[in-house]
Image (cartoon, rainbow, N blue to C red; front, side, top):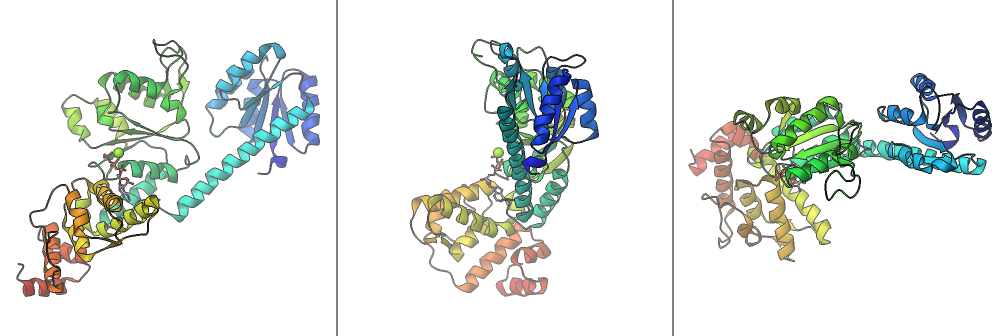
Length: 452
Ligand SMILES: Nc1ncnc2c1ncn2[C@@H]1O[C@H](COP(=O)(O)OP(=O)(O)OP(=O)(O)O)[C@@H](O)[C@H]1O
Ligand SMILES: [Mg+2]
């Protein structure tokens, strides 16, 4: 859309005003439509798409404020500019709170009218461009920053792909550091909401009262410290995505309010009398078993079912050791950029150690191990001494210690095969797959090294 070919709807109950404005806009090359009140404006909007709406505030049948309220429920609606008299600037402020983008004071000066309209249309065109570029970028890097080609990760990609197409509520579960927040952001970035806000809140990090006002907002004076109006994350995420981390920690009292907000699609800010409509996609995450929390009476069952519309469990790193190498390289590239340093080389001994390690802290722990190697050493290589102290649990079957001398190729191979068998709980097909060799070859090696 170029600004010049935009369609504009002017709403005013004074016929003269409509004629004057229509004439000015028509001369600028815009396609102009008119309506005498809010109700007729809405009817017009049902018939055809409009880029910009200019509306008077005082009108019979349905006034400008009510019209703005109705428009707020439609996505994506036109941008709106309100017309207001000199004495009623306060109502312009009110209108902007209701979602109007700008205002003009009557009687309006044609140059100012043209300027304001051009500016609003440009903003609208830019917004559209940004969101289409974002979608484009998303297509080229299919799953953004998520790394891993293992079977369990492919299942995760398939699930992301399908939930990105709609706005259903998603419940992510998985141990700490498995990438829940990363997946939540990816779902948002691949959805039609990509151009709108992604808001995140950690339900376990603040007090119940603070979480209440963070989520639902408050009016000035609703409580002692409420010095101004606060819109709350639900409204800030309107048309976008709200990510609720550690959802199991949401206090009982807020669970009811939260349930109501998702059911009714509206929020009532503290101290407010009118509920506000919101269109928000919810993605919640937990590293606890929410069903168990329900069974123990700590989490409302009805809320659980509302959240568990699409459940997506993220695999631990131990379930997908074949991704460790790619993740290591990914974090090395990332840290090299962050530290403005060259990428480091990972020695084979380190690769083997990383592969054999159990990763209780999952991808985040691996990220920390690599970051530590960048923070503590300028060496070109990452060697065992750079990683060993950072590994949380030392595997007793640790193949090498920092003091170990360089193993022979056969020693290294034996250790790697033993680690793969252990990881695959003795399942030889799986071990062969982890090692990237066929089964026959694995059997020969097992014989050779006496590993059975
Ligand atoms: N598959 C992956 N590919 C690339 N990076 C990943 C992957 N999984 C996790 N990460 C990275 O690991 C770190 C931890 O991930 P994230 O914060 O999303 O985990 P989480 O499940 O939310 O953890 P927690 O429960 O501790 O909050 C992040 O820096 C993230 O970018
Ligand atoms: Mg997290």
